[in-house]
Image (tube, rainbow, N blue to C red):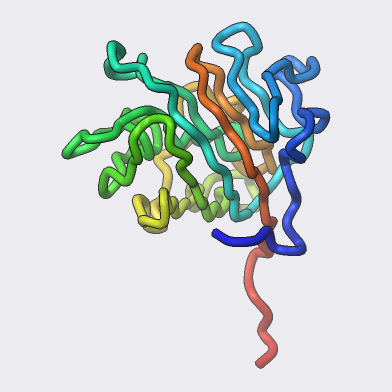
Length: 208
């Protein structure tokens, strides 16, 4: 995507993580240098935004480290959790012909990406994610699970799919409530930058 929409909320200001916390509420301890966040590699733990969101469009960019000797889930592993509940996998899956439910771009352990849109490690990549939260009835029962469309590097890899529920590692299962954006510390030195979010109304105007 190009410039940040004027009504978007900037989640990373390029200078510090003052509006992020650990899962436990402590100040976020990941490194920030030259406008880039680097995962601390297990020492800092996951980080979450102070703000919580219902429906939104999320943009972020990330870079995989070069780990030629690593394989599988040990190769540049992180994740973006929507509302802190639904993980879009971040991994070095470059070159995999048919990606699976644990590869980069997967809704972790639920849906494999439609195609492998990964760039090689050490190149910046993008996620643009449109998210609609779960719909509950007046009794609090889930009528429709959350839905998501994911565009990786300008390629659609999930097209308005309905989640099966929260993914593993979710902060909670309160799917009818707003939740934060969570970036996962899985022990690998992933880099992030240019993170912003655009909250969405439930529907557009009825006025012609």
